[in-house]
Structure formats: C-alpha cells, structure tokens
Length: 307
Image (cartoon, rainbow, N blue to C red; front, side, top):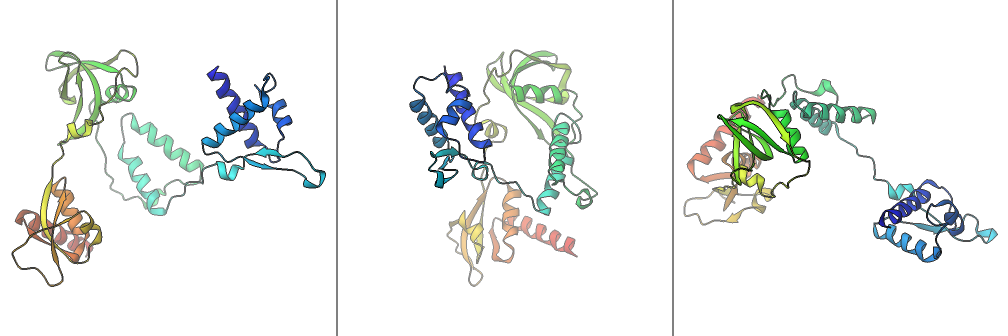
C-alpha cells in the first residue's frame, strides 16, 4: 500500500513538473496512475498535494485562460523546483584539479576521474595549465588497501593474517601515520578497537559477510587522533577572527601599545602557529617560547619565499 502511494505521489510530481500549462483536477485524474481507480479522488488528491507542499515543493494554482472562465489547474514551476547551477571560481577549479590529482592510485582514482568528466561535460573542467608542475600525492603501495577500502565503504567485515595470526575486523577508517597506512576497526575476536599497519598484513585480505553488517562509531575520528589542546598567550590588536575564539588572559609582562592579552587554543601546534601567522602584525606571541619561535620561523620562511 505504501509503495502504491509513493508511486502515485511521484507520478503527480512528474505530471505537474513536465507541463507548461495548468492541469485541471479532471486532467490529472485521467493522466496520473492511481487516481482513475480511486473512489475518493478528491480526498486522495488533496492529501497528495499537501504531501508535496510539506516537502517544500511549491504548487502553483491558476487558469490557462481567464476569459473562458476555465477551471483552475495546477503546475510546478521548474525554476522554483530545480536547484540553481553550481558555479566555480577559477581558484576553486584549480583546487578541484589538485584534489583530483592527489589520488594517483587505488579505488579513488576512478572516482575522481569520473567526477572530472562530469565537470568537463558541464563546461567546468579545471584548466590543467593552471595546476602547479609539482603536485601532492598520497602514495598507496599497500596491495591490501583497495580491498579494505571497498570493505569499509560497504561496511563488510574483513579477514587477514597479521603478524602470523588470523584476524577478523570490522574496518572503520583507513588513515596515514608517519607515512604508513593503518586501518582501525573492531576486532571481532577480542571485541575491542584495534589498529593494524597495512605493511604488516601477510597475504591477501578477504571481505566476508553481507554489506551493511555494522555501523561506524560516531567518535571514530577522536579514537584515531584523541583531541588535544595547545594554547598560547597572544597579544592581539585588530584580529577579529583570532579573537573570536580566544579568551582574555592575565599577563603581568609588558604589552605592545594598543594590544590586549588573550589565550588562543588549537588542536595542534602547527594549526595554532598557522592561525597566529594568518593574523600578521595584529598578533604577537607572548608565551610559550616554543610557539613564539615557531611563529617567527614560519613568518621568516614566508618572507623569504615572497622574494
């Protein structure tokens, strides 16, 4: 019954969307599958219209010729129904091109190629002439990568030999650490979260069991990289973006004129340094010394590269 209703509502949507003129209730009853057999057409039609409107679909009501005193009809304006075309700036297209060229091997290579073909068909392909000659790559030399990638995408368990022992794992994520690929998931034999280096897997990895056999925990990313907080006391003058996430800090030492002390935090040293550098002369690191030295070194590097 539910399937018949869904099909009827979909047929109504198609009929209203593909017409340029207003369709009367009589015309819709004749052309929409599921209405002709209905003994309570008026009530069914009103419910179906309400369902479409509840989905945010605007149904126009009007007459094709007011002079002939025609019955009001219905239609859907394609302009209000369809999403606007997606447009990219030249800089965004370069970024897309860089991302597509990052994966040179593994399963994702075909996916990125398909995406670029779709963009090209729509007239929005990245201009390869604007891509830098040296591009980042994510090396995937591990023969087990593709099988694990497909398995975690399909949420299927895998079995493999690791350090001489047979393992059964529900894979959650593939990630890199110090240039090595690892997989994290639930060890089915130990019923515990485990990590395995792909370069220590012996032989082939086999996907087992049905697809959709498990759910990936919502906190898997924090299990991969537990959240940490790195803080620095920074003198700020006119840096609204940096100050928005900062808290006023007590500072007994001297401050540059027009500056106030704030505590700025981030999850890693590198991200904290990058955020402070982005504020330019509006931010001065007061403490700790390690962050101040890192900011100075980063700014000196940027200054040299600019010349």
